[in-house]
Length: 155
Image (cartoon, rainbow, N blue to C red; front, side, top):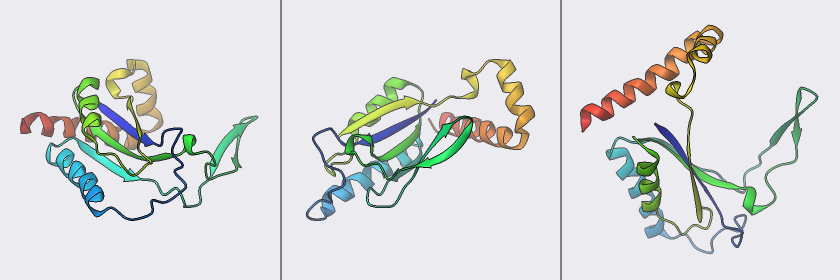
């Protein structure tokens, strides 16, 4: 199962303010955590989001998409980054999240959510996906099954 762990600041933290100094040891703790997940074979992706970079929010009205103001003004709306992991259960994903370092202020709250996999969808929906997007669906589901097989054989 794939899970996304998103990181965001608590309501008390102002994420648009940069820390006063760069903490080398704290940064290395984050990188060691990435390395640990990579070595365990569960890390699919891990990225931080730049709170100072320009962004946009896209909404829909009357069936049409349009741009609304951005980047996110309120710190409670800003996602600081994410980990995308592939593990066997929600409990395992939670255990990894509990081990994550903290201290940059943009990751006080971690939210763990399961991503939809082919096993979560009814056969008729899988058929529609395959009909509408044959190349993408074969690639997406095949890579997940390959990763799962490799992780299982590594144990």
